[in-house]
Length: 295
Length: 160
Image 1 (spheres, each protein chain N blue to C red):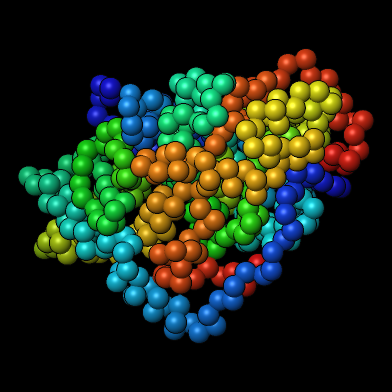
Image 2 (cartoon, chains in turn yellow, purple):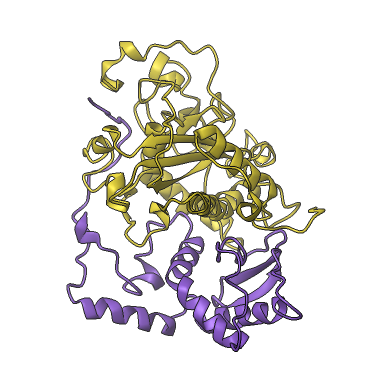
């Protein structure tokens, strides 16, 4: 499978990464070359495709908004919590590979093995990507902290002190969907990570205004495909109830994949208009919805 | 400026558990960590000593394809080549990922591989311990539960 001997990508990476396109290229190299981006079972499909990368200024005032209880939680922290001299936050979204998404059949109540394995083993590879950013930052003379690989990280009731999705929104990676996932140019089926650094990097402009700009239901009042797909009705007209979602994982998916050790559902990320990209025929209506605007 | 997120799902729970106020208790937790079934330091050191032995034989020739693999079951480490992953194992590239500074694995004059392995493991141990902890608890709510609870360095939660 690997004609040449595998080696750590960063060690041989001769380029300097500045803006989000550079970092995207760098992480794409990892996704392509690092053997850990493969399922450990069966045909060892690739787990992720090329990521989407965004960069936010550590001083972006939206970070302060995340500690409002109606946004994330009062215990959500700002970038300078992780690193007092923080200047930038690099955020990325890694979409699941075509092979994994193709394995997710529309009529099945349970997710396929490829998905549940990709969800768990993919999260390990997300850690690889987080560390890859750290190492390239260091190579460029900077310092970095990975919030989700830090002992200070914690979460309660799905409310973390550092929300990868919200950070991604601020960094220009994408907007939220009714399914509560982040919706990006590479779709909504994927995993996210971020790194805080003292390097001053060019900010990626947000190509949106509202929190739900890319979601057809929230922006145009049509679709709700994710709600219809959910086998346990965890998504209503307004939001996703994570308690119902988690209970489904524990009661149905975990027993089905007990021997494998996996348990994740992905119905609300697959076989949807937003699974592989931003839904088409979208009208820009965010300015008509002041409730969801970034003023 | 507002950022109102309508999909917030549950009320904020009470403040997180209190952290030990005794600094000595926190540092001693580091020493206690190896007694638990977490990352096995002796096997990490032994694997890296073996690596040092190999790459310092007849001159210094670091091997970029060798990795430090760690088994989930008992958190023991050994050397293998970077290949497709196998179930219940994670691995780290020795050159570049664990040791980003070239030459770190060069054996200093008069030092044995075992001695140098002890030294370089000491440099990366806190970071590797955390990385591996998260790798084996993916999608976790942090290293503050189950086997990891109250081990190692407690996070400075009260600062939040």
